[in-house]
Image (cartoon, rainbow, N blue to C red; front, side):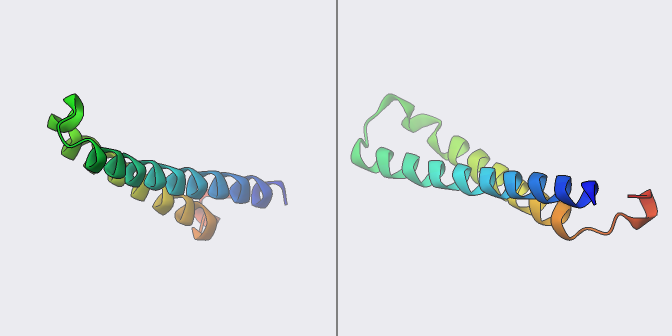
Length: 75
């Protein structure tokens, strides 16, 4: 029973973190559109790509923890 609770908490935290990261990246894009000649515009595509990939990894990991089959590991 404790493993189910821990997996649920980890899953929700990972999915929530991924959604927050995606929100932050979209907010960053909106900020860059408002200030097109900013000093951070040169590395913006790489930062945005990294942020989106990280968000997808967090969301995917949360789903894997929630619905993964860990019976072979003895959990």
